[in-house]
Length: 305
Image (cartoon, rainbow, N blue to C red):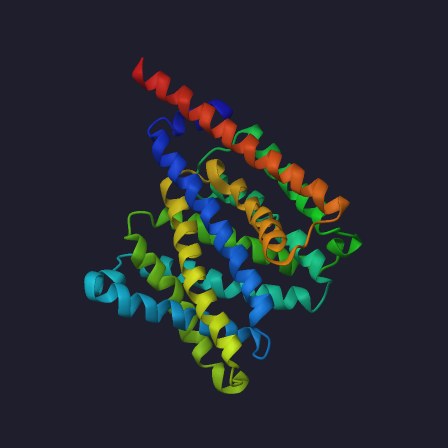
Protein backbone atom coordinates (compact mmCIF):
# COMPACT_ATOMS: atom_id res chain seq x y z
CA UNK A 1 0.00 0.00 0.00
CA UNK A 2 2.81 2.41 0.74
CA UNK A 3 4.03 2.07 -2.83
CA UNK A 4 0.52 2.65 -4.13
CA UNK A 5 0.10 5.96 -2.37
CA UNK A 6 3.42 7.03 -3.79
CA UNK A 7 2.05 6.44 -7.30
CA UNK A 8 -1.22 8.18 -6.36
CA UNK A 9 0.62 11.39 -5.51
CA UNK A 10 2.94 11.52 -8.52
CA UNK A 11 0.44 13.69 -10.36
CA UNK A 12 0.44 16.26 -7.55
CA UNK A 13 3.29 18.72 -7.58
CA UNK A 14 5.39 19.30 -4.50
CA UNK A 15 4.27 22.92 -4.36
CA UNK A 16 0.60 21.87 -4.27
CA UNK A 17 1.27 19.42 -1.44
CA UNK A 18 3.18 22.08 0.49
CA UNK A 19 0.22 24.43 0.01
CA UNK A 20 -2.10 21.75 1.40
CA UNK A 21 0.15 21.30 4.44
CA UNK A 22 0.27 25.07 4.95
CA UNK A 23 -3.52 25.27 4.85
CA UNK A 24 -3.93 22.45 7.37
CA UNK A 25 -1.50 24.09 9.80
CA UNK A 26 -3.21 27.47 9.24
CA UNK A 27 -6.59 25.91 10.01
CA UNK A 28 -5.12 24.46 13.20
CA UNK A 29 -3.93 27.94 14.24
CA UNK A 30 -7.34 29.45 13.50
CA UNK A 31 -9.17 26.80 15.52
CA UNK A 32 -6.76 27.34 18.42
CA UNK A 33 -7.58 31.07 18.31
CA UNK A 34 -11.31 30.29 18.15
CA UNK A 35 -11.10 28.05 21.22
CA UNK A 36 -9.04 30.60 23.14
CA UNK A 37 -11.39 33.47 22.21
CA UNK A 38 -14.46 31.53 23.28
CA UNK A 39 -12.87 30.68 26.61
CA UNK A 40 -11.65 34.19 27.35
CA UNK A 41 -14.35 36.47 25.94
CA UNK A 42 -17.70 34.70 25.61
CA UNK A 43 -19.38 33.84 28.92
CA UNK A 44 -23.00 35.00 29.02
CA UNK A 45 -24.68 33.14 26.15
CA UNK A 46 -25.40 29.49 25.40
CA UNK A 47 -23.25 27.37 23.13
CA UNK A 48 -26.12 27.28 20.63
CA UNK A 49 -26.23 31.07 20.43
CA UNK A 50 -22.46 31.25 20.12
CA UNK A 51 -22.44 28.83 17.17
CA UNK A 52 -25.35 30.69 15.55
CA UNK A 53 -23.65 34.07 16.06
CA UNK A 54 -20.40 32.73 14.66
CA UNK A 55 -22.08 31.76 11.40
CA UNK A 56 -24.07 35.00 11.23
CA UNK A 57 -20.73 36.86 11.21
CA UNK A 58 -19.36 34.35 8.68
CA UNK A 59 -22.30 34.86 6.31
CA UNK A 60 -22.41 38.64 6.70
CA UNK A 61 -18.72 38.88 5.86
CA UNK A 62 -19.16 36.78 2.74
CA UNK A 63 -22.27 38.61 1.54
CA UNK A 64 -21.00 42.14 2.25
CA UNK A 65 -17.31 41.78 1.40
CA UNK A 66 -17.23 38.96 -1.18
CA UNK A 67 -20.77 39.12 -2.56
CA UNK A 68 -20.26 42.16 -4.85
CA UNK A 69 -17.37 40.37 -6.60
CA UNK A 70 -18.50 36.74 -6.67
CA UNK A 71 -22.30 37.26 -6.76
CA UNK A 72 -24.16 33.98 -7.42
CA UNK A 73 -20.92 32.00 -7.50
CA UNK A 74 -21.13 31.97 -3.71
CA UNK A 75 -24.22 29.74 -3.85
CA UNK A 76 -24.07 28.04 -7.25
CA UNK A 77 -23.40 24.30 -7.03
CA UNK A 78 -24.46 21.15 -8.85
CA UNK A 79 -23.95 19.06 -5.72
CA UNK A 80 -26.26 20.69 -3.21
CA UNK A 81 -27.04 17.53 -1.18
CA UNK A 82 -23.33 16.96 -0.57
CA UNK A 83 -22.81 20.62 0.31
CA UNK A 84 -25.65 20.45 2.84
CA UNK A 85 -24.27 17.22 4.32
CA UNK A 86 -20.82 18.76 4.58
CA UNK A 87 -22.23 21.83 6.28
CA UNK A 88 -24.23 19.81 8.80
CA UNK A 89 -21.03 18.20 10.05
CA UNK A 90 -20.25 21.63 11.50
CA UNK A 91 -23.57 21.51 13.35
CA UNK A 92 -22.92 17.96 14.46
CA UNK A 93 -19.57 18.83 16.02
CA UNK A 94 -20.85 21.22 18.72
CA UNK A 95 -23.89 19.04 19.38
CA UNK A 96 -21.71 15.97 19.94
CA UNK A 97 -19.44 18.08 22.15
CA UNK A 98 -22.33 19.18 24.35
CA UNK A 99 -23.62 15.62 24.64
CA UNK A 100 -20.15 14.28 25.42
CA UNK A 101 -19.42 17.02 27.98
CA UNK A 102 -22.64 16.17 29.80
CA UNK A 103 -21.55 12.56 30.31
CA UNK A 104 -17.76 12.64 30.85
CA UNK A 105 -14.95 14.99 31.98
CA UNK A 106 -13.89 17.63 29.46
CA UNK A 107 -10.31 16.40 29.33
CA UNK A 108 -11.54 12.95 28.31
CA UNK A 109 -13.83 14.49 25.68
CA UNK A 110 -10.91 16.28 24.01
CA UNK A 111 -8.61 13.27 24.32
CA UNK A 112 -11.11 11.05 22.48
CA UNK A 113 -11.97 13.77 19.94
CA UNK A 114 -8.39 13.74 18.69
CA UNK A 115 -8.94 10.35 17.13
CA UNK A 116 -10.24 12.48 14.24
CA UNK A 117 -7.03 12.31 12.09
CA UNK A 118 -7.23 8.52 12.28
CA UNK A 119 -10.90 8.60 11.30
CA UNK A 120 -9.89 10.78 8.34
CA UNK A 121 -7.48 8.03 7.27
CA UNK A 122 -10.29 5.46 7.54
CA UNK A 123 -12.55 7.64 5.40
CA UNK A 124 -9.70 8.08 2.94
CA UNK A 125 -9.63 4.32 2.40
CA UNK A 126 -13.36 3.56 2.58
CA UNK A 127 -14.85 6.60 0.84
CA UNK A 128 -12.13 8.20 -1.27
CA UNK A 129 -10.28 4.97 -2.17
CA UNK A 130 -7.00 6.73 -1.35
CA UNK A 131 -4.64 4.13 0.14
CA UNK A 132 -2.91 4.87 3.44
CA UNK A 133 0.63 3.60 3.96
CA UNK A 134 1.72 2.06 7.26
CA UNK A 135 3.86 5.07 8.09
CA UNK A 136 0.84 7.39 8.03
CA UNK A 137 -1.12 5.03 10.28
CA UNK A 138 1.80 4.96 12.70
CA UNK A 139 2.13 8.75 12.73
CA UNK A 140 -1.60 9.13 13.36
CA UNK A 141 -1.58 6.60 16.20
CA UNK A 142 1.43 8.24 17.88
CA UNK A 143 -0.24 11.64 17.57
CA UNK A 144 -3.45 10.32 19.13
CA UNK A 145 -1.46 8.78 21.95
CA UNK A 146 0.30 12.09 22.58
CA UNK A 147 -3.05 13.84 22.85
CA UNK A 148 -4.22 11.25 25.38
CA UNK A 149 -1.09 11.98 27.43
CA UNK A 150 -1.60 15.75 27.10
CA UNK A 151 -5.17 15.58 28.38
CA UNK A 152 -4.36 12.95 31.00
CA UNK A 153 -7.06 10.66 29.71
CA UNK A 154 -8.30 8.11 32.25
CA UNK A 155 -10.79 5.28 32.30
CA UNK A 156 -13.51 7.79 31.44
CA UNK A 157 -12.58 7.39 27.79
CA UNK A 158 -13.95 3.83 27.96
CA UNK A 159 -17.46 5.03 28.87
CA UNK A 160 -20.35 5.09 26.42
CA UNK A 161 -20.10 8.89 26.44
CA UNK A 162 -16.90 8.50 24.45
CA UNK A 163 -19.06 7.66 21.46
CA UNK A 164 -20.21 11.29 21.42
CA UNK A 165 -16.60 12.47 21.39
CA UNK A 166 -15.86 10.03 18.57
CA UNK A 167 -18.86 11.56 16.81
CA UNK A 168 -17.19 14.98 17.09
CA UNK A 169 -14.06 13.64 15.45
CA UNK A 170 -16.06 11.84 12.79
CA UNK A 171 -17.86 15.07 11.90
CA UNK A 172 -14.59 16.91 11.35
CA UNK A 173 -13.14 14.02 9.36
CA UNK A 174 -16.26 13.72 7.22
CA UNK A 175 -16.14 17.47 6.59
CA UNK A 176 -12.57 17.12 5.33
CA UNK A 177 -13.49 14.06 3.24
CA UNK A 178 -16.45 15.82 1.62
CA UNK A 179 -14.23 18.83 0.92
CA UNK A 180 -12.07 16.52 -1.18
CA UNK A 181 -15.09 15.12 -2.99
CA UNK A 182 -16.36 18.65 -3.66
CA UNK A 183 -12.98 19.99 -4.76
CA UNK A 184 -14.33 20.95 -8.19
CA UNK A 185 -16.75 23.44 -6.61
CA UNK A 186 -15.37 26.92 -6.05
CA UNK A 187 -13.78 27.10 -2.56
CA UNK A 188 -15.90 30.12 -1.64
CA UNK A 189 -19.05 28.26 -2.68
CA UNK A 190 -18.21 25.53 -0.20
CA UNK A 191 -17.36 28.10 2.46
CA UNK A 192 -20.72 29.87 2.00
CA UNK A 193 -22.72 26.66 2.17
CA UNK A 194 -20.78 25.56 5.25
CA UNK A 195 -22.22 28.50 7.17
CA UNK A 196 -25.65 28.63 5.55
CA UNK A 197 -26.89 25.18 6.54
CA UNK A 198 -25.79 25.59 10.14
CA UNK A 199 -27.31 29.05 10.39
CA UNK A 200 -30.75 28.06 9.06
CA UNK A 201 -31.69 25.30 11.56
CA UNK A 202 -30.17 27.14 14.53
CA UNK A 203 -32.21 30.25 13.68
CA UNK A 204 -35.35 28.35 14.69
CA UNK A 205 -33.76 27.53 18.06
CA UNK A 206 -32.73 31.10 18.90
CA UNK A 207 -36.10 32.30 20.33
CA UNK A 208 -35.83 29.60 23.00
CA UNK A 209 -32.21 30.19 24.08
CA UNK A 210 -31.58 33.88 23.33
CA UNK A 211 -29.70 35.97 25.87
CA UNK A 212 -28.53 39.51 25.14
CA UNK A 213 -24.74 39.22 24.85
CA UNK A 214 -22.41 41.64 26.60
CA UNK A 215 -20.13 43.89 24.54
CA UNK A 216 -17.21 41.60 25.38
CA UNK A 217 -19.13 38.57 24.15
CA UNK A 218 -20.07 40.41 20.95
CA UNK A 219 -16.39 41.12 20.27
CA UNK A 220 -15.64 37.45 20.90
CA UNK A 221 -18.40 36.33 18.53
CA UNK A 222 -17.06 38.59 15.76
CA UNK A 223 -13.51 37.30 16.23
CA UNK A 224 -14.70 33.70 16.30
CA UNK A 225 -16.83 34.25 13.19
CA UNK A 226 -14.05 35.80 11.13
CA UNK A 227 -11.16 33.62 12.32
CA UNK A 228 -13.39 30.54 12.21
CA UNK A 229 -14.33 31.29 8.60
CA UNK A 230 -10.65 31.51 7.68
CA UNK A 231 -10.02 28.24 9.51
CA UNK A 232 -12.81 26.45 7.67
CA UNK A 233 -11.57 27.82 4.36
CA UNK A 234 -8.04 26.61 5.11
CA UNK A 235 -9.27 23.19 6.28
CA UNK A 236 -11.28 22.71 3.12
CA UNK A 237 -8.46 23.87 0.85
CA UNK A 238 -6.12 21.38 2.49
CA UNK A 239 -8.50 18.53 1.73
CA UNK A 240 -9.18 19.81 -1.77
CA UNK A 241 -5.52 20.04 -2.76
CA UNK A 242 -4.02 16.76 -1.53
CA UNK A 243 -4.95 13.23 -0.46
CA UNK A 244 -5.93 13.07 3.20
CA UNK A 245 -3.05 10.79 4.30
CA UNK A 246 -0.62 13.57 3.38
CA UNK A 247 -2.28 16.23 5.53
CA UNK A 248 -4.54 14.71 8.21
CA UNK A 249 -1.99 14.39 11.01
CA UNK A 250 -0.94 18.02 10.66
CA UNK A 251 -4.22 18.70 12.43
CA UNK A 252 -2.44 17.81 15.68
CA UNK A 253 -0.59 21.14 15.41
CA UNK A 254 -3.71 22.78 16.84
CA UNK A 255 -2.55 21.72 20.30
CA UNK A 256 0.94 23.10 19.62
CA UNK A 257 -0.57 26.44 18.65
CA UNK A 258 -2.70 26.44 21.81
CA UNK A 259 0.35 25.82 24.00
CA UNK A 260 2.24 28.61 22.23
CA UNK A 261 -0.64 31.08 22.57
CA UNK A 262 -1.07 30.26 26.26
CA UNK A 263 2.65 30.79 26.84
CA UNK A 264 2.89 34.07 24.91
CA UNK A 265 -0.38 35.66 26.03
CA UNK A 266 -0.75 34.40 29.59
CA UNK A 267 2.64 33.02 30.59
CA UNK A 268 1.13 29.56 31.06
CA UNK A 269 3.51 26.65 30.54
CA UNK A 270 2.54 22.98 30.27
CA UNK A 271 3.33 20.55 33.09
CA UNK A 272 5.76 17.67 32.72
CA UNK A 273 3.26 15.24 31.23
CA UNK A 274 1.84 17.83 28.86
CA UNK A 275 5.35 18.92 27.90
CA UNK A 276 6.21 15.33 26.98
CA UNK A 277 3.10 15.26 24.79
CA UNK A 278 4.13 18.54 23.15
CA UNK A 279 7.57 17.11 22.34
CA UNK A 280 5.96 14.01 20.82
CA UNK A 281 3.58 16.16 18.77
CA UNK A 282 6.51 18.20 17.48
CA UNK A 283 8.11 14.92 16.43
CA UNK A 284 4.88 13.80 14.77
CA UNK A 285 4.66 17.07 12.82
CA UNK A 286 8.28 16.99 11.71
CA UNK A 287 8.09 13.28 10.89
CA UNK A 288 4.95 13.72 8.81
CA UNK A 289 6.53 16.60 6.92
CA UNK A 290 9.75 14.68 6.22
CA UNK A 291 7.85 11.62 5.01
CA UNK A 292 5.59 13.66 2.73
CA UNK A 293 8.45 15.79 1.40
CA UNK A 294 10.62 12.77 0.60
CA UNK A 295 7.75 10.98 -1.13
CA UNK A 296 7.04 14.02 -3.26
CA UNK A 297 10.74 14.42 -4.10
CA UNK A 298 10.91 10.74 -5.05
CA UNK A 299 7.75 11.01 -7.12
CA UNK A 300 9.09 14.10 -8.90
CA UNK A 301 12.32 12.23 -9.66
CA UNK A 302 10.41 9.30 -11.14
CA UNK A 303 8.25 11.64 -13.24
CA UNK A 304 11.26 13.44 -14.69
CA UNK A 305 13.25 10.27 -15.49
